[in-house]
Length: 436
Image (cartoon, rainbow, N blue to C red; front, side, top):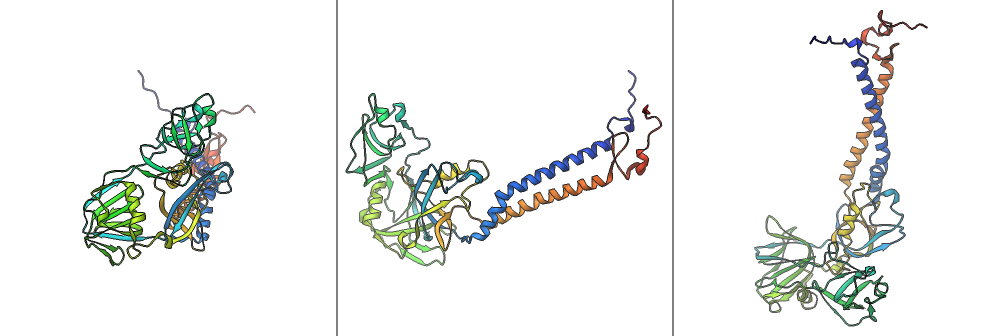
């Protein structure tokens, strides 16, 4: 086959120089438009929150919060977390209230042995089977049930509830059973579909057995977790002041936010409500209910080891928000995870949420869960510099193209400096001549 003669560049329909110029102009225009849109979006997402954070006066040192209640509201004037800041105050929301207090003691547990951990699991509200009364699934309920808006969860195997009084019975079985129990709310004691609402006061303790207390002299309660060990002494993590020595006759009990291994021993963070219990009160094995009973009623408080929660309290029933705006703009379901973690108020009879939070010293009535001024400044700097530089560079490039690019009589774009400038605009001898 004969070889095909290559087509000269000047005879191509669109010469390479024309393609590069068009591509450059398109990319610059697209970059300028997208960067301008980004600046508008970042004004709400980054710039305004940064200015509020600077002016808020929030103390960057975290304190501690404990969730007291999480309320579902149909019409909100404020919410703990909204998925989009432009619509955060519209529609239904969840409002979380917390108790705010100063940090407790951080203690170093030295020369510890025979350590043990026991986690007392309650009911997993997300994965537990729910009985929907409107579907006539409550007609055979037997046991203790925690009900919310007509949806009941069996807690008989996880909790032991002691109570005195109940409301008149509701019959969830029969022809009208699902209508009768359509909106049941609270804790119910049921027998074959006949349920009685348990009146307050009542006490529900987790059925957590076989906690190994033999030869243990330190017991730390941390939410749903119990840490036990035999230690020689306890000291302040800062300064090393010894606050307790083992004398073989007593057991120390604490409530701490977290327990972890450190370089010099076991570290218990944010410890409060220290109490001493005679060793004779502890057997080889116990359960969570009896351990709580010993801690609250039998043990003697000791404020030298760790302060009481009451004396550290700054405010009760403060509003909790995820940040200063009470909303996020990522549209990544952050609020769902936030409410699941921070909304645990103990109504499901599990441990209440306990976490670091941030407050304004003159106004502890509102606290935020997220506040990092350094990270906010870095985000502001990146969000300001990057799109601004892109807009400026794109606009300058477009202005240079406007001054240096010409369109010839052949409708092709060329730089003025290429090919002798105006000579490129003259007709080629072989170009077709218009009859006009």
